[in-house]
Structures are given as C-alpha cells and as structure tokens.
Image (cartoon, rainbow, N blue to C red; front, side, top):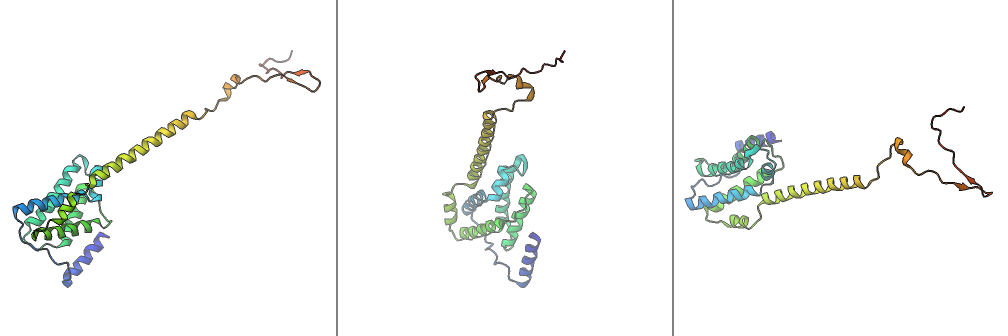
Length: 208
C-alpha cells in the first residue's frame, strides 16, 4: 500500500500535478520558536505516535525518540533550501516511525499530520498562530492514551479479582475418598411402624 502511494506521487510529480510547494522563506527566530511549539503540540495529539511511546515500541528511549522526531520535522522545515513538498514530509514521518518505533502507519494519519504541519507552517510565515493557540487549549493526547491504558489495566485487575472471588465462593468438588465424612443415613420407619436401619458398610471382612 505504501509503495503504491509512492508510485502515484511520482506519477503526479512527472505530470506536474504535485501539491504546491510551501513557501521556502525563512522564519524569524521568534516565529521559529512558536512553530517548534506547534510541531510538538501536533505530534502530542498523533495517536499512532503516542501509542508507540506509551507502549515502549521504541525501547526505553521511546519518549526521547518522540522528541527527536519533532526536532527532525523542525529541521526539515527550517533548513531546507528547496521547495517544501508535502509528500516529502510524509516520507519523513513514515521513515522516522519505521526506524525509531518499528511501526508502519497505514491508517492515513501520516497524511493528516503532514497536512496539518504544512498549513501551520504557512500560517506562521504569515504571522498567523491561530492553529497553535487552539492546540494549546486541548488536552494532550498522550494523557488520554495513558489514562485509557490505566483504565484497561484496572478492568483487567477487577476481572481477575472477580474470577478469584468466584473460585472462592464455588463449593469445591469432594473427592471420592472423602465421602466417609458425609452424614450417615437416618433410620426410616416402615409402614408397620418398625424402623429400618440401613446396612453397615462391608469393611472388607469375608463371611465366615
């Protein structure tokens, strides 16, 4: 699926139908700082990335690798001397997820994140930081992913406790050798009023 997408993009480039490149003008230091914050906010709400971090798919340094991804994206925008194409940004995100987290993303989120970053970059070039302001007011997805993981663990623990409780409440099956502890049969009167006593168990003695 990924290779087919790359072939399609290559055909679009050959036909001159690729998405218009982003303005390659340099951002001022102040704007660059705000854009860096915006990149971090966008990535903090990327479900695939946050799941990879929370589950440690990148090893013990998963959180650091997430920060490195943000730095790579910022460098791609700020240091490139050529026109910026969205498909190049998508390739960057794809490769970083594959190399750092051993994860191949096929849910379409790479394209969505890349588009959001391109639009945000255009806004910063024009002095428009509205998209960044909106993201500041949202709960980082990492917290939601962590809470969801904790709830899932709690449910598992409760389920285990319930199963253990059920095992305690259920009456154990009595093995045959413990049948001697059962109550002895009572004497039952017959129709004539005589008591009928159940015969004693044969204890292994043979008749004389």
